Image 1 (cartoon, rainbow, N blue to C red):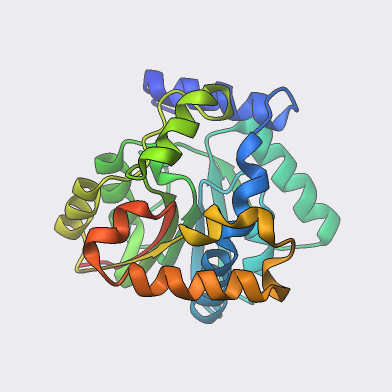
Image 2: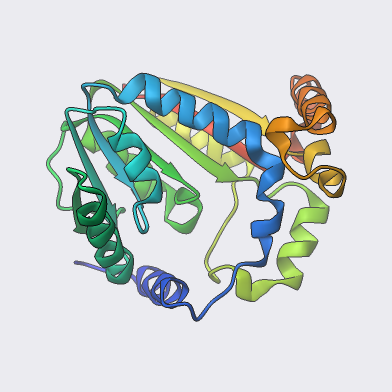
Length: 247
């Protein structure tokens, strides 16, 4: 693989993470994004059946395994971390899943152009050079193919303070999305839809345990969706769901 210095640092970070040498403290907060993950999984289920699908930055294959059960025609997973891919291959064998895993550079992969109906990823684009990765995804998609990604936002000042206080929880080159990044995506893809998540559900996360069964969570998730319809309040969101279509 042709790797940049940033690529090399990402390999080192994620290999250490998958070797049990790094801990990510923000995991306790992810329940605040329950509705984001629910929407993400619903979309993947509805759009992967009988399709050729790519898990872009698949890690150890946890999400790939779920999508594989949606009966795609073919599913491929790529990741720059060799340790992650080794784990993904072992898990696929254990669960008897037909998944093709490869160590590859998401910014400049060895995959053929115009191959995939759907490319998806969770928390991967903000680790990459967005210009390179967005164009690479577009190259890999078939005509009218779709991409779907979960990404963090870098606009909430309180969340950004937390990030500065916990630098070891993330790679040094991470760059959560800013408004200009969405403008760039709109220059690459024919259709770009962005949905925002996670303000009040994050603020009030100590007050519920299981969001899927929580009246409190459901109330604040609904409030979030109402306020995020107003553009000026979207900077408060923690994460977004990005859907786009190839030109």
